[in-house]
Image 1: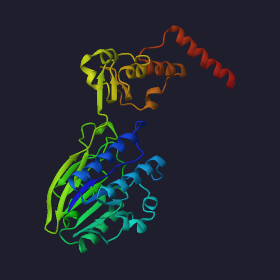
Image 2: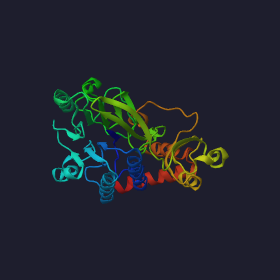
Image 3: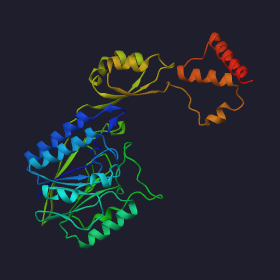
Image 4: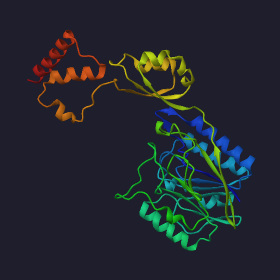
Length: 354
């Protein structure tokens, strides 16, 4: 039995408002090709099919297209709901479409999906205490060569910035020992592909959904298993439609440095270190780097205060606070004419309120 483990598609998600529909569609094309070329028997989708409980029409259409094409390529599809999905919406019609070879599992159950000789126990997203109970129940009836699909945070897994917190009452990660009774555990939720141990893995998301994932190599796990237990597991890299990179430096340098030519087509997060905030910085950056998505300003050598805002403005007049705001935003203090204009504005407000 050859299984392809994937998760966290997050269909409909954007990257800092940059649409990712084409990139997600390209990943579906890649999956279908992999199923055909590797003669995959079943695709295990470990939750977070959509990015939100009420997905867009485009996201739903892409999901339907993916399931139809994967079945046409010869693979069964086992899908669980993740913490981003609406279990009711994703699971609608599940009993009707089981016969098509697409198995939607959005409710807790100890009944497996049987693929050939391999039982696959599909556990949708549950609060951590419930997940512990469900794994214990399933392990009690599962044979040693069984596979489990689950969505949650297992201790030892590395997080990134794009995952929604699923801790409850201070409880978050569950113990890896809960998966001891399974030949292979296909996990979803964490966006970096990783191996907790040989038969306990996260496939990660197919695309980077935050700049904290810029160094991830995205993809899926190709798993060989059967009645004798787990066989070979190999990683299948996913296509990278557009690379994510971070740049730091003064605006003038970033706009002229020939060494940065390789980043002109990347999604970028840029931190400017100019002593004064440059005018129209984003527009000027996007003239060279059209896919700049994030812009931060950290003047080189500037001191960072640990004081709260309330403490910093205490004992300061309205005009002084406004002048400090101009200095913070622009990087230079207001001149005499600007100070006079600010004072005039505050005086007009006070007179109108009298």
